[in-house]
Image (tube, rainbow, N blue to C red; front, top):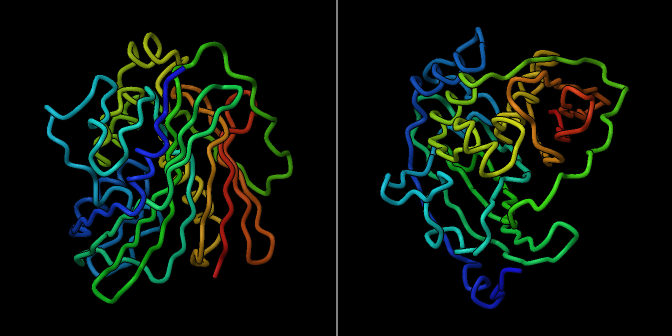
Length: 279
């Protein structure tokens, strides 16, 4: 079992990082094409929810990339001595839209680092706060939950069955081209999303994995096809991995000012849950 120095990890709490970016029309066009979206926001128009994840991307040099494709640890994120890391969920509030074409700043702060020991081994949870300001002030406040964990030692338990009371359901079969394009747009070089021999032979997954942020984005895109109401807040949590090449459904229902959303795998098992508050 890896030895976790909690006091050393706690030293990362309060660490900050600031990035600036141009909310370019070109980037929005590329993501719209990746998502098969007909409507492309032009300069001056609102950037759709969660599309900000293709901006403020990490720019680690190739020499700074580890064997799994992630940047080396110990920069902004703590140097956790566990081999696997994932973006497990998050909570966002939308004060105002980012406008395509404007300059924006993201200030990131590590809010908490905690270690736990459970049935799956040692886990380290890192909570990061991102505050994104456009030219007219705060636009998005986002908390991300990042989890570091040990390598899998056996088959994972089957996730629970997905709810059966959806008002709508959209299905896709995400292939390697979609996963590669989203990896490229987010500058995410984690090999589980595009390197099948690595994903199956080293990390033990049944195939290429769908990015958690991509699943969350597809849930919001599915919701946007059912309502024109803006998002006030959005939260999501990963339940189980989704594998590319197999059918995935993005489901939901609207209850007043709240939308309940979930993604399910080809076996009808729960992969992600989410909730949105509508304006």
